Image: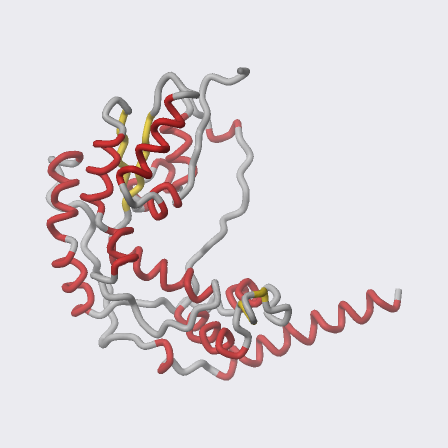
Length: 259
């Protein structure tokens, strides 16, 4: 009763609500609480999304070795932007639809949080707010390859329960493998993804960005051949850095216990 605007944000609105009846159920619930609804959808280039999801899967304990096929059902649902926009438009016919592209140079302030705030807060001023640290960053190529190996030795779940030996292994690997390497698609993967999602992206472009020639910027960096994480060689310097950091942390714990 004390606020005029309530912002609800979650990527699960799109990834989990796959059927029209599920989205309609959300609409009916919101209709009982709010007078007006504005829907803000962020769309990301499918190939960049695939790389991000590969990193996320590995940080969550996965052992994938390469990018998913674009027609893999759960992945295609996330990146079929034309279908996503049509479903939400259909289920929320009276809502204001705002479609944004998740690309740094197209986001206000180059930041998705700032961009989102500008869509929901009238007369938004960045300096008036505090911000949490960035999280869910994409692993480096080295980080992906190393953490994938460790995931096999320390699976996330054992007998459907969290593995106590795993701890915060994902963060540890990320913090110690920032070596500038990146997972890059090969040109063949780029072509496959572009062709598969072309009609979907075009339907969004013609409706919401008619003055643009393409919905997303073209990729300009490619690997010479398809990358398989199982084949990536990890430099000895990385292992030395990890061992040094582990030893330092162990000694700190021992010294604290003696105080």
